[in-house]
Amino acid sequence: MSILVTGGAGYIGSHMVLALLDAGRDVVVLDNLSTGLRRAVPAAATFIEGDVGDGALVRRVIAQHNVEAIIHFAGSIVVPDSIRDPLGYYDNNTVKSRALIAAAVAEGVGQFIFSSTAAVYGMPEVVPVGEDAPMRPISPYGSSKMMTELMLADVARAHDFRYVALRYFNVAGADPEGRSGQSTPRATHLIKVACETALGKRPVLEVYGSDYDTPDGTCIRDYIHVSDLVRAHLDALDYLSAGGRSEVLNCGYGRGYSVREVIAAVKRVARRGFAVSQAPRRPGDPAILVADARRISRILGWRPRLDDLDTIVGHALAWERQLDALATPA
Image (cartoon, rainbow, N blue to C red; front, top):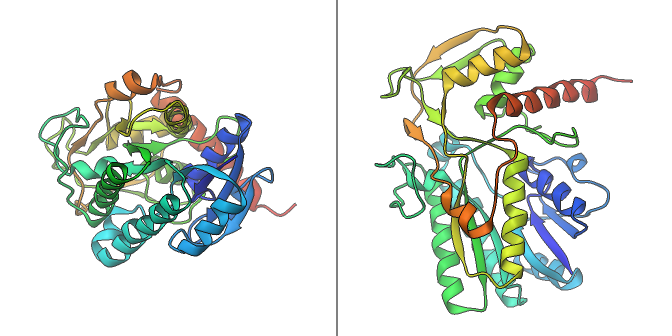
């Protein structure tokens, strides 16, 4: 029996593949390499280049590799891009997820873990935000993920199908052993961009908005280490395998840091300064987004191990330096 990881050549997906292999599981990766990197997939995993929206392909993969569960990462994730290209995001994140879910149902795969997002909450009225808060997304990205959550709930009511939707807050860092990290060109994640700027890969870091209703005027986010996040997926997989019912769970630490606090942490850990400039607010950015993470601990028994901003930054910086070495000819 194997686990199918869609988007397994991407940032979070590649860490998931490593964690599954470390746990002794057989892993099949399906990725169209539109943003993922083939070299990010370990040799011990079976790699198939293809699209999750290709239902016939997905059904063949499930049957040929005796897939028992699917962990679905494939999708588009940049909020401003979704505002510029809403139809592209609804296609990639919703329509193709529908095709994947349909293939799972047709082939009798009844365990599904979905990579969702805190963007489904939009501008939450209460912070920290719990899973029972209204879903009021303010971007096509958040709406496209919300629609997939709604599909999953309906499918679970109609079929022998159980799922865990994990709503990520801000994922950052890299594998502590240096085996994987965020490698996507033109990344938009703050810690990644700040590390690139600290190492001279970017001339300046832009801060989008300084007039939010927060202590220092910049947005506050809940940053979760990617390794803690993938352990939540392992816990969810064990939970479903043991017969657990469908759940929606936040993935965060329950504590937020402002943009300026993150910049200070990167400067501190890198032991160097870098240029920072002010830019206008971006559309779709709430002022504060912090998780109420009590439910995931109660339901899955998940406990963070790397809940420290400097640790997250240190691992991200180490990966950036490793990328430099990979790019340097021998």
